[in-house]
Length: 92
Image 1 (cartoon, rainbow, N blue to C red):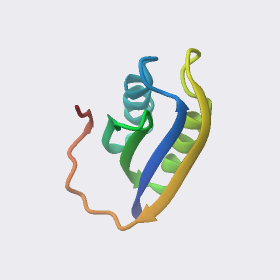
Image 2 (tube, rainbow, N blue to C red):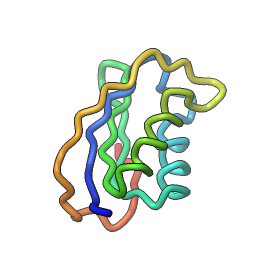
Image 3 (cartoon, one colour):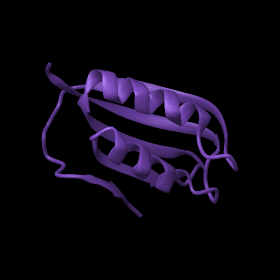
């Protein structure tokens, strides 16, 4: 299987509810690399790299989010795998 990447933007009540840490835990469990960060508009962005099936599972998990979050939308843009991320990080 080949590796791919995706740029994600998660909308809804996703800041101040542990959403980036939720992304981190899910990415580790799925062996994905990349990052998640808060945006000034109240959304969360993420870049993930790994197997397509694992990224699809990650996206499905993000549509639910942690119990204190309310996710209204997850925008996905598929892109080329870069291999530049050794692990998944929470960025500030």
